[in-house]
Image (tube, rainbow, N blue to C red; front, side):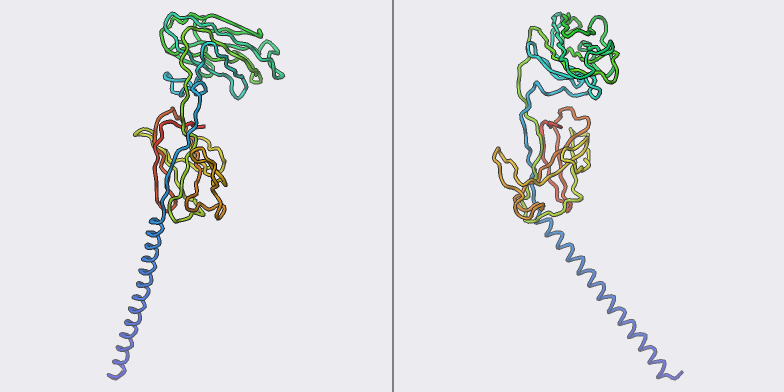
Length: 321
C-alpha cells in the first residue's frame, strides 16, 4: 500500500470521527433542548398552579355527638339528659347502644325503657329479652360484657323501670341497652328515659363536614390522577389516605367531586360551567375524608396535586361521617 492510499485511509477515519462527533453533538444538543423545554414547561406549570383549601363546617347538636372510642376514656356512647327521651334499636348489625350521664357519688337515677313493638321477631320467644347494664366511671360497655352487682335488668315486659344508686364515685356513668343471651335474629326498637337531678347544658358543636379546593391559578386540571391527600393528627400521626370513587369515603379514604353548583358562605353558586369535568380557574373541587380511630382531635390536611404543588389547611374538629 502506497503512501497516498494510507493517507486517504487516515483522512477517511478522521472524517468519520468528525461526523460521529458532530452527530453526537447534535443529539446531545437535542436532548439538552428537550430537557430544557420540559423543565421550562414544568416551571411554568408549577408557576401557573395555585389553589386554596377551605373547610365547610356544619353545626351538630352536642346531643348527637358520641364520645370517642378509647377505653377507659370513652366507649362511643351518646349523652342522655334527664327528662329527654332517646330512641334506639337493637339489631343484628348494631347489637347494643350505649349512653352516658354525669353523676355525683351518691346520686340516684331512674332509667325507664319502653319497647316499641315492631319487627316480626320482636318480643317473640323467651330469648328475645331487652337488657340494660350500667357501668360505673371506672369501666364501660363493650360487646358482650356485663355490669357487676345489681347494676342491670333483663325484661320481657313492654315497659321496665328501675332506680339505680350511683355510689361508685363521681363522673360518667354509662349504660348499654342490648339483648342478653338473645339470638342473632333478635331485634327491636325502644325509648329510654333517665330521670335525675343535674342536667348538662345542651350546646352545639361546629365540625368540618368537607373541604373545598379553589383553583386560583391559570392552569386547568383535566386529570387529577396522582393527587395525594395526607392528614396529620397532633405531632405524631400522619396518614396518607386512599382515593375512592364512592361519594362517601370509607375508613382512611378520600373522595372528590366537581359539582355543577356548590355553596360558598351560604350562597349557592354555579361551579362546573366551562368545560365540564375540568377544574378550571375559580372553580371548586369538593373533598371528603374519613379517618380510622379519629377521636375529635385537631389536625392538618395536606393536598398535593399531580404536579407536586401542595397546600395545607388546619381543622379543629372533623364530623368524620
